[in-house]
Length: 373
Image 1 (cartoon, rainbow, N blue to C red):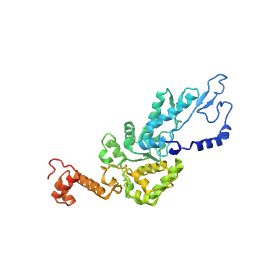
Image 2: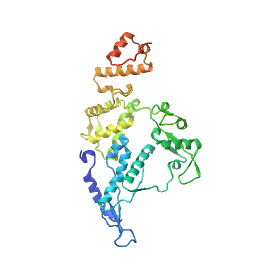
Image 3: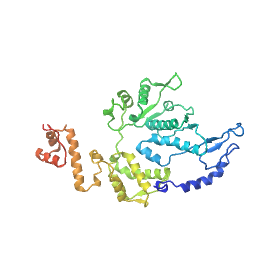
Image 4: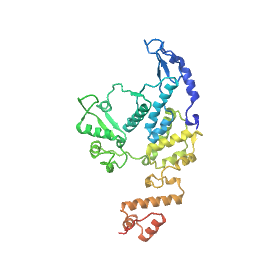
């Protein structure tokens, strides 16, 4: 794949930088020893005298693979790439790396992602003999949330140590900052999110019962996207605007037929899946109008056939195959509710037992030994 196919316009970036060179040069002091556009900036240490080695400074990004890292939840690797890119740029200038100055900014804090990024950066720093510097003395997250709200996305993804710390803070109502012994009162509203079924997982390895009890005082269910199909066209337009403006992707819009198809898609992974699908369609490029055929091709390999019934995309199948998928998923899930008892299943679904046995065999649904009741 070429850069332009991935949505990266190098020529446009070069033209933009070229138009800004004079503005950047206007800030140069006599200590600057390099020009705009090099892999790293070179500067003489004031007062060090002639012949003293220069300092080389570099900053870099990771490009469009950041999108892949976010969707695959592999931020650790891409965070390490930030360090490796800067180290390479420093080496190209004939210097050797001394330290990496880290800065982390995000619109909404996800503790799991923050931990993965810092771990990836630290790992790359150790491998290259580089010190990790940062932290400008700002208060920590708990102190920043004072008088406001501390939002924790997917609380089960927090590192175990962070979960234990949070449970202790919520239990005692105070915390102690690093390097201090004075307790600080914790005064903030805590909002935590989790995947469905968190009640059954409480007490397991990903969430203690104590922490679950502390953060579930007022549980709120966020309905899945499939329950609001009328919102899909507006969400498609909003996501398109965000992707074209924020990621400089080609503008494309879904045809009416494509919108109607997506309104009836079950969206197993909700809004994240919608954004991923739309990003893929924009990255592929093509006519301004996204056709129904394009959407069908992208959806073809989405949800597995053994997914829960409400998450199966039956509209993608021929009628006979869709009916078989529906009947198989329906009877399998009903059989689970009946504890595997065929007699109870027959009463529940309103079928004569002999006919039900034939149907189960035809659909390939296995019946455990002793399923009679």
